[in-house]
Image (cartoon, rainbow, N blue to C red; front, side, top):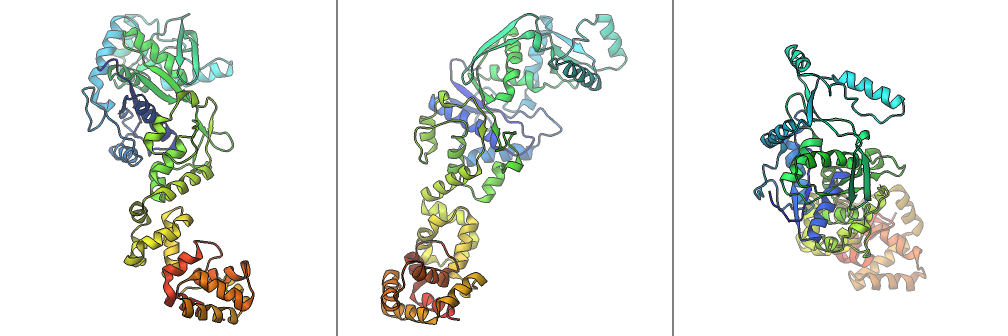
Length: 469
């Protein structure tokens, strides 16, 4: 176990795809570790045997690396504190079970799930916090032996001391105080011998040298229980900080109905990782700088005092804003690869750079790039009924004059527009909208001068002729 070292960790359960909540937790831990020149560790909490899969484990690692969240310790980066999968750490848990049992701080519990559920309902109905009533706490050795002889397999509960106070300073929420009388004795070993979250999570943090635990505030009430375990075992207690949760626009927990997707889904939609981390870094945390920042810049300016204690509201428009910022900042090679093979098959090789430069301000996702590739390079542009009507109302004389201008000036949009303006006396929308529709079948889009250059004089003339009805 490493000591006197700043170490943050991200410890997901591989029971599904990474969502925005645990992705933000990973990001904040990595940013804060980077800020303090510490270690960011990845630990896989796969004790839920029925739901944890290798597929999800591999995917969450791929998602983290795609986001440029690179752990310095964990899978494929053993620093002597492994294994980094909880399913492989049972021997460590058993060692500390024995120490707790030797101190008589545990006892077997034979209560069934159905019995416990009834007790919780009764307590809630009485306005009391749901906690274990201590039914099995005072079983004698003979009673325990009798139940085992009947084939009953117990869980193991931690005996919480009464009339004590657990206090700690949350580095996000400030001083916290809990009465042990409100906690109840909790399970630290399942009937099948495996360790539940409350126990193994705390043991791992202490034995793996984790100095800072930053997690969602839904874990806040778990913290006093874990502190009791660690103190009983004389293990180091990390500093705890609990992040406000992410909610939707109706203040309920964030879900798919609010527009939330997994990192895997966002990646497949074409989100840039830099845009996504810039959005998440500001979801419950404020920065003085408003522009797009690299990971190193986000870390350098990260400040735990700027973490909000109020729920962070998911905003799909803000997510799109940072996506657009990332697209604007991407280098040409990255943007070209991002556009995809369909775009690559449509855009002529000699026009790659010009195409990127032309459409960059008007694309947010690869599908936008594909749409513009088709609009610009399709030899047979089919106008929408609305646009066809505009072209008809504009009249053939307009387009004949435009064709003459291209014949005279080539792919020089400024000269073309000025010629039409002088000859026909049109300007503003009456000048530019028919030209834009004729050349792209759109009423808004990239700069017309760039579209004309991209098309070339020959194609511009073909489209102007096709616009005459």
